Figure 1 (cartoon, rainbow, N blue to C red):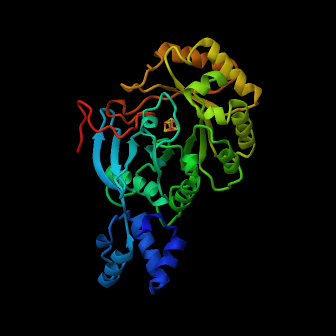
Figure 2: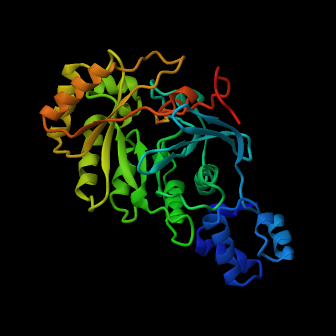
Figure 3: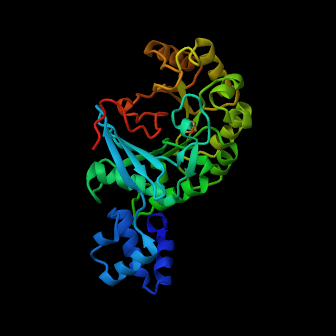
Length: 356
Ligand code: SF4
């Protein structure tokens, strides 16, 4: 079965022509899937019934099913979905003052073993297809605004859910290209940010791609010693190599593109004044100008960490700023429903969750 939600408009036209139908039917189906955000052929009542019947035999309009939906006190929604082969996929919708954000997953589980992340405990189940990435966005948009309704303020996407997006690079780039189609979802790459734990070859590759999403690097530690411990991927691509690739990437930035570092703040682990100075020196030594987002850790029972207190975060920020590093503090969202960064681990049973 071909999942048509993962085909570009050109691929869909080719698919439909192979089935003996005219090209305009391909365009029509692309619009139905990606612009009207319909998730079944039966809803496409402007297609002849016989064609819908034939499509059912070889293709599908959607593959993900919604298992549960959790609503946070702050309006954040977490969707727990299942793939056709019964693997968990999580997506988070975060309402914001100026623009809403959808955080999508690139893999079911994750092969990297960041010690502060609950997803790591699932291991890698498998990488998601372009269709499965796009469907997450369609499901979240339809739930938030109604089927096919335009987001009133537009929507930003962040690839910061489960998985390491750069270990599923081709599917990720393909999905972002399909979503950018003006006759489809029309979410342009500038509205999309992907976060990597530091897959260096893909950072270099992204530097060569003109229609690329924004990039965020999850740093987590200012020294190799500490980063080896918190983010074992550092043993493969240590800080010097990672930041060298970051510099190459930064040099290719075009106006309007965003490049940031993310730094999860773990109480008593990576949040000292000395570590703030080390971080600033590291970035300055590599002549990196990207801003740093400090993210207070989101606690989760099996993880041995606590979030840094607000005063510590402020001190860390002021040290970075005193050394010329632009620094922001990210407000955690959806902690109560296990929707916050590093908390996605297909948690289904948590006291007090409002599921629907
Ligand atoms: S923080 Fe990201 S890369 Fe690291 S284990 Fe979690 S999902 Fe994977």
